[in-house]
Length: 155
Image 1: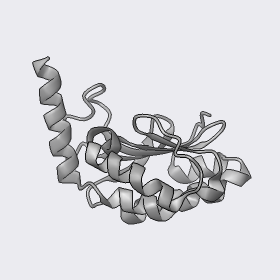
Image 2 (image 1 turned 30 degrees about the vertical axis):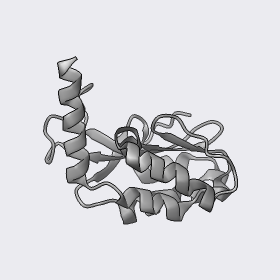
Image 3 (image 1 turned 90 degrees about the vertical axis):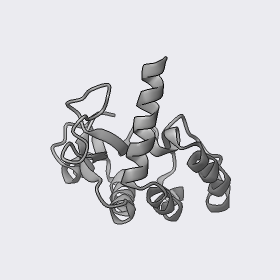
Image 4 (image 1 turned 180 degrees about the horizontal axis):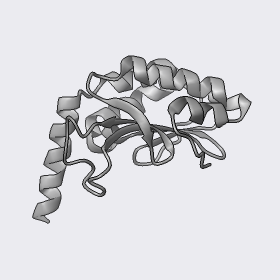
């Protein structure tokens, strides 16, 4: 679902009441556990945590005017989405997450390349997501991102 929000608070305020608390807790979980340097903003009509242009002036290679995305939170029609670009470019973190998930949640993991979907807000594993947020430093993320760009340019 698309929300026309100017701030993370505005975004959450526009959500259906049954999603607001889960999104507030999810936002706090990310904010409290994200390594230093990432910045909260609204990006792609979602709550986003990005590498600001002041740290990485090149921005996102697909849209250089946009800051480099790292994590995004969204309330979709049938689920709450937790997008984590680090899972996409750090296979070892993905493996760790897939192995840890069943230890925290009884339902099957529902995810795409970088999107973890939660159909039931009551079973969001906030502690696991907090640990996931701490797994990748800003410096490591930028290094892996740059390595990936160099690989793309060689092809």
